[in-house]
Image 1 (tube, rainbow, N blue to C red):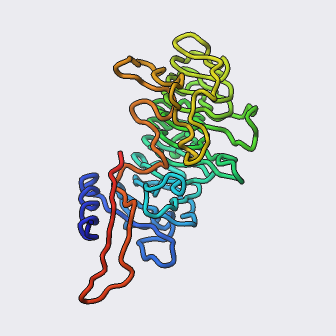
Image 2 (cartoon, helix red, strand yellow):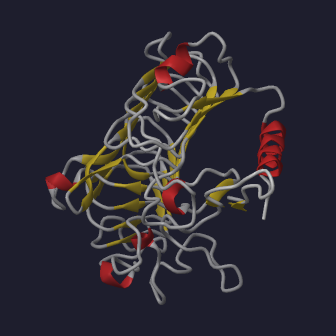
Length: 358
């Protein structure tokens, strides 16, 4: 049993170590909660929120809206699919946002654990991290009926200089577009897919890199859509369905349902995808279905793999594996129970369970 004040002190100390000079701001639009702000745009517009500060979007059934950002901020949400991936957060609601645009001045900003639900992130500056966010928007039983995008553009104050040094990592249901000759683009451990509404035979782009853009594309799953890329590196990816177009790419240790990546350089072609993934089933979450099943040909198929140190292909492989539900790498409360009534002689007991997250 933890005392509430002990838990809060522990979390505060962790955040103090994370950034000893920054302040943490709470955004919550639930009617019964008092926080610093009720919308993301209000937090960004506030003169009290300084460059380097952290903004927590707390769980809610409603969106926190859109924002255009021109200062360095770290925006952290609650994760997603929490009603399917149990015992990760005490409140199984996501932190929802609409479109976010990073303009000049936002260099160094980070997005973590946000539920964008088909909305987009537009990047017009260097040094942005988009990590562990969900862009998939559901319709009926189809979780990625309509997917949002991360769009890497030019500097907002220096057109047409491209935005460079962008990390897009561990996201679910995302379309990625790099429209200028950006360099230092890392695209890793994502579930990348064009809209399911267009069908598996769609030729619309799930990943589009400008002809002179240079990216490292590693340990992703491409569910459907076309990849267009040149002068980039593709390793340890799995293409469930789709097409691959481009020249001068370094392509190795990928798997595909057809011959999209070829069969040289340890690429595997014409792989039966029913042998690769766990798939849907009782107790399997939307994002958990893409884990590798026992005996999967993707196990140990990654670049540099050895029997003593196997490296898997797909979004759950590599040095930074996809994390279920997009849980941010911070301590989280996953269970909270309290005695319903108390008195001066019988104080209310509160039991809190806390987990660390990588």
